[in-house]
Amino acid sequence: MYDPLLDKDPGCNAPYPASYWAGQGQAEPGYPALQQERSADLVVIGAGYTGLNAARVLAGRFSQHVVVLEAHQPGWGCSGRNAGFVLKGTGRLGAVQLTERFGLETAQACYREYRQAFEQVATLCQKGAIDCQAQPPGYYKLAHQPRFLPLFEQQQQLLNQHFGEQLQYLSQAELQQTHLADQQACGALLDPDCFGLNPLQLALGYSRLAEQAGATIYGGSPVLGWQKQQGLHRLQTPQGSVTAKKVLIATNGYTPKDFHPLLNGRILPVQSSIIVTRPLTEHERSACGFRGQPIVMDTRALKYYYRLLPDGRLLFGGRGAIQGRHADKPRYTKALRSALEYSFPALAGIDIAYQWSGWVAVSLDDLPHLYQAPQDSSYAGVSYAAGYCGSGLSFSALAGQRLAELAMGQSIPNLPCYQRPLPAFPFARWRRLGQWLYYQWGRWQDKRH
Ligand SMILES: Cc1cc2nc3c(=O)[nH]c(=O)nc-3n(C[C@H](O)[C@H](O)[C@H](O)COP(=O)(O)OP(=O)(O)OC[C@H]3O[C@@H](n4cnc5c(N)ncnc54)[C@H](O)[C@@H]3O)c2cc1C
Image 1 (cartoon, rainbow, N blue to C red):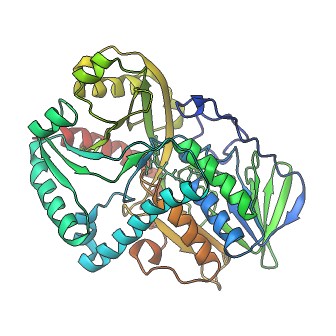
Image 2 (cartoon, helix red, strand yellow):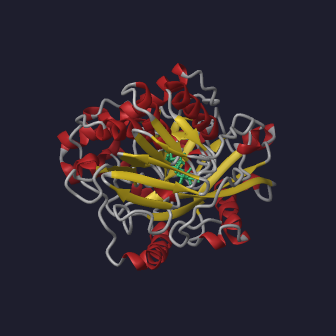
Image 3 (tube, rainbow, N blue to C red):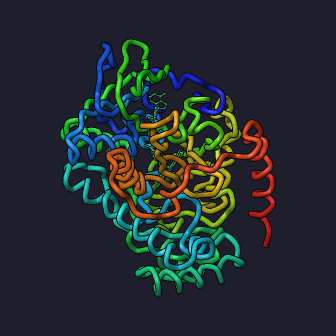
């Protein structure tokens, strides 16, 4: 598997991973490769949610001549292979942590932005008639240890009083009797708005919207070389090149090694892995206490997440291997299966029909960042959005728009995630060692009562 920390070349036109989403039978988009020398006002690198939304806004609202260069096909990265949780947040800081770090007013402003992003997903789906199999809402944050229950109460109070939310606190008995019977859960916070969808359909829908707005998308066109001549950027792909004044980097967790000085050493690509079971029988569903089609995440440092899919399968995800070359080792599937069985003993030994992994971009300060290089720097004209820390489905819809606004010289909200570049990891060469140490700590922490 491509490893962004080690590989300088992201590959070219690889098929979509054998995920449940890619197995739903929709036609692959087949965008052609760039095969000429051409110019544009702006180039967007990467056709995930961020890049496609940026391209849509640049071409539509700002009438710019935009070219999108994607190494594979739209949604090949995280955007077409995630779990499809549409959440009101991004990064690793919830409302409580945002308030602790930045104060209530700034935390509220961040939350308004996250909420706007959440709402934008539905608006875009409606506008573009994107059928992404949205499921009925209901997002459960599960406490895997009783010590998280007081934090849940604090979260519920803060969010309901100061952030306009209507979170519901569920005791263990309420949760198990009327929502889902996860044997690991000691209680839960229910957000009645968040929901699940088919992420690949969303990405393909976004690419249609970007095209309809006037952007030109090239698949199978990895940027392999980058020169700057007389204030213009020239991006080289295997069979062509584009010259433009401005470049938006939207490669996020899939950013290749040493891709651009603005991003080098500032992202830790972390693998998240998913397994999907065969459809559960009626008996199994009721043994697991599933009502509706919940989307669920727990409080572990090394989180697990799961959701019931429209055809009754259980999607279950969590931490994957540290290195790309170990992605397909059976022990990672085994670890996810044991966690699934631990939560739902009735599913012991269930067949796993799909397994895949992807790279999420973790930032040092747990926040995403949008950044534009200053006009007087050698990187003038370059901007990026990255570091969503595994929670970017909804945020990317707005981040793409903000990135476009930034590139067009418009002002964007004055929020911590838009004020500064991604902080550099200290001893960046040793990021993987730090990750391994974090995993050891996390395992210990997650067992602690
Ligand atoms: C297993 C998994 C589960 C997840 N679940 C959720 C979830 O349920 N909810 C949620 O909110 N978030 C989730 N995420 C995170 C979410 O998917 C991402 O935050 C989001 O998709 C990021 O979108 P993006 O457009 O910024 O990046 P990506 O979708 O990763 O797009 C980057 C693109 O850049 C391309 N690229 C890279 N290098 C080059 C190059 N040199 N030239 C041209 N193209 C290049 C790649 O091919 C890729 O298509 C999950 C992630 C994973 C891996």
